Amino acid sequence: MTTFRGVDHVGVGVADTDAAVRFYGQVGFGDVLFDYTGDVPGPDRRARVVMLANAGATPIGPGRIKLVQVLDGDGPPPPPAGGGWGELGICEICLHARGVAGVHRQLVAAGADSLMEPLDAAVDPHEVSLDIAYVADPWQGKLELIEWTGLWKSLPGGPRAEGVNHVAFGVADIDRTRAFYEQLGFTEMLFESTEFFDPMAPWYPGEPPGQHMIMLLSAQGAGIEPVVLAPPGPDCRGEWGHIGPFEFAVGVGNLEQGVARLRDLGVELRGAPQTLDVGTGEWRYAYFRDPDDLHVSLVEARY
Ligand SMILES: [Fe+2]
Image (cartoon, rainbow, N blue to C red; front, top):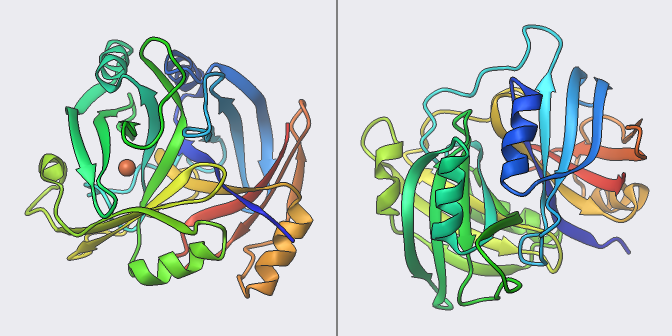
C-alpha cells in the first residue's frame, strides 16, 4: 500500500538560475540536491532544473524548492497576467519561519519586496494562532512566511526560514479538490475561511473577489491551500516552467507503487513515468491530471 508523503516540493520558474540559487541560498535553501541541464520528458521541454533543500527544515516545514529555467523555444514562459492571489494556478510558496518579523526583515534585505507586513491571527475552526508576512521574490513570486505559533514550535534559535510549509493554488470547486487530494493523503483540515483576507486587497487589479480557502495537511510533507475566488478571475495556470511558482509534487517512496495507486483511484497520468540521471542520483516523477489540470506530479527522490 502506497503512502503518499505530502507535498515534496514546489516548482518555480526562473529566468536566471544562478541569481535564483543565490537568492534562495540567502533564504536558507543552501543544499543543492541536484543541478541538471537537459531534456525533461513529460512536459517535453529542455531546461535547467535545480532542487534545493533547507538544512534547517523541521517536520512543520519539510518541503523543498525546485528551480526550473526553460531553455528551449523562446525561453522561460512569462508569468500569467492579471494574478492577484487564488486564481486558477499555483499562486504562492509558504515557508515555515521561526520569528516571522525577523525573517521578513532578512528577506527584504536580501532583495525581496514586502507585500504584507508581519501580522498575527487565529484561524477557525480550531482557533490555531499564527504569525504571517508576505514578500515578493525578485521575480515577483509570492513568498509567504508563517509561524504556526498555536500548532508546533520550531527548534530553538534565532530568526530563520525553514522549508516549505504549504503551497497555495486556485481551483474551481473546493469540495471536488478536497475529495481528490484526500485520496492522496491530505486528510486533515487545519482551517477554513470564507471571509476575504483584507491585507490582500492591494494585490488584485480591480475590485477584490470573494475568497474561500482551506488548508489540508498530510501526515508527512508540506500541506496544500486550495482557494476559490468569486468571481473566478483570469486563468493563471500558464505553461510548464512559467516564471514564478507553477507546480508542486507529492512525494512517494516508490514511484511504481505510487503510479499503481493513482491508476486504482482512476487518476489519469499525463505521459509515462520518467527516471532522469541528475548526476547525484535519479529524479523519478510522473505527472498526473488533478481536477483543475494544474501542473502536478508524483516524485520519488533518489538524489
Ligand atoms: Fe498560504
